[in-house]
Image (cartoon, rainbow, N blue to C red; front, side, top):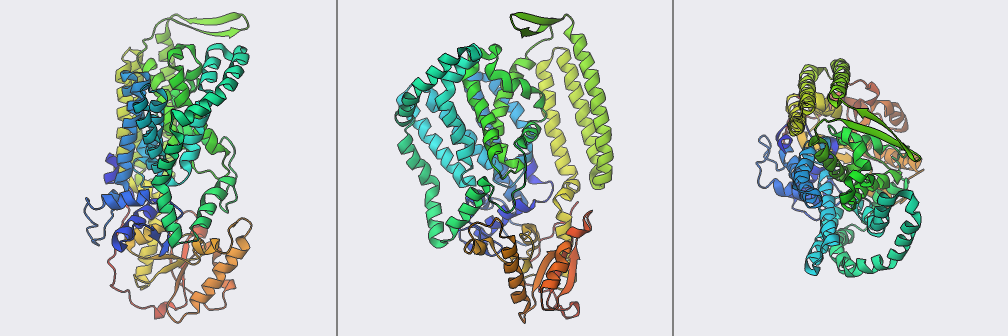
Length: 615
């Protein structure tokens, strides 16, 4: 949560959340989110409601007096991340014991997924909280003996699932419902598989087939499926019906946003292979990724035999969540975030064992047929020191390479990032020394503290380096160029070849507009794949219409598309401003107008202008 009170500027998607919430506060319409002067109903409203609600207890922007600041936009995510860590602590404690619960909470709270998305204003961590909440109550409902307790947890499960839908549409269906249905029908056969291996396939198959009908019946009698579905729908369906009544094209928008996206019938679908999410999942568990191999095997290892049922539960949560999202044609790195707590629960059990283990003579073996081949390590401490030296050399080399890369690509924060990374590496190596000397819990604490400290220091001391990746400097340059050109601040800016950048409105109060809004497109063509030419013709026709007005009109187009747009317009257009200066000049923004620069009106003093200057 510490990262929500400062750091870099909001990203474009974060600014969309913040601006929707600000529009709710200033416009008074809490039913229909609005941005770029059009309804934004393709996404559910819970993130905007929370940001707008938090803004009541936080001060408004000091320069403009407008509600919703960067802190207000990020605070709900920070709180959601903290709550999710507490939920994993509670679930791990009930499954694996109190000490394992504390270890899991330590690992989760210092993992990259919570550090990164806990300071992100988008809906990802809020969805993760709802999914974790749902998994917790389903486990309690499935394992409770008392009927009243089972009923209460089952109803809370459906409530959590409904709020997940209100946070980010049907994502909980793929990330929660599908893995739980699989676990519900296969948990007993999978436990037999873990105990007996493939040799018990007859018993596994018999158990699976025999349990189909009882499990289906228990879903209605023990999990209260029908009343639960009513509770589940009551959370989000009223909002959908109210919005659809006000905006009838919402159904086409939701079909385009969710169904077509999942099927790959989406104009922005990129070819990403079935293993796209594997390195991302590993990266989000840093710095604990070294535990993931044994964590994935834990549900099948005899050393964890007493915990197989719970391990299979959290294992399917993490692994099936990633697998289901991998089957989708449309992939984004953050889609698997709600599955990561399941992996962290697995890793917490492994860490509980690993950090409480002292180095002693051990035999590592491999069974080949009926014979077991083993290697005796009579002095594992010596082996550990050898591994430590190798890791130290590797980390030193990686640090040198990273420093050179930072100086070449992120000069604004290269030295600060190098110092922070050096301190983190020294701390991690110190943790390794503590572990080798038998102080496992000290090593765990040093690793967790060093990771959190390094992230927060980088977040607060190097915002310019982070901003460079988010192109906020380009938005700042655009705002300054518009001011210098005398473009009135209250005049809308139409974006020709991309969605408007929400940061221009949020930070500089310059209203962006779609030239042709998605809501307008879906009323003409539900399936947008293969319709690029038709959409392009709609955009150019609208541009000609706008530029033919007697009033000054301003369009933004990327430099690489300027010649095409200019050649497609009969009117004479003037370049009145530009913004860019990055490594890709073809992506610079050009501001076109039907008014020559010499005839530009003076900047109006209507709306106050917030300023964001990269540090």
